Image (cartoon, rainbow, N blue to C red; front, side):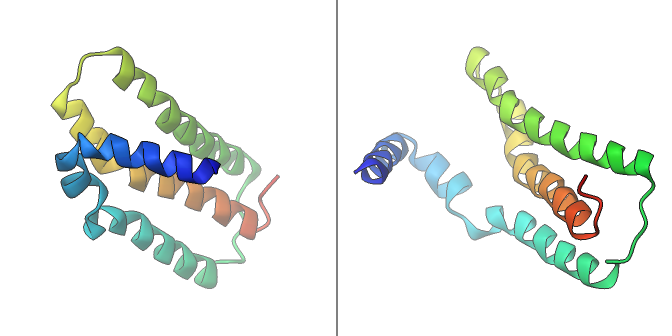
Length: 117
């Protein structure tokens, strides 16, 4: 029952935002950069699995990736509390998915190579 309820809410949201749905949410090329980042991560893991990362660099990479993820989650507060700015929205929508994929790829790479903590 709950997933169906969420689905109905989503459909209701998109009914009023057809431009958003058609130009930002649905196109395949919008989702392609994170997919390519994942493919590159797979190649890097295959080629460079036996890498030694110094402890300081490991901590910095973990801090960077987790900070980036927290930033991408909390930036929505800025969008909801301020007036709509097309430039800010365009920059966020063009970079957020790729930035999330990069942060997640770093975490996956660090864990796969034995630097997970």
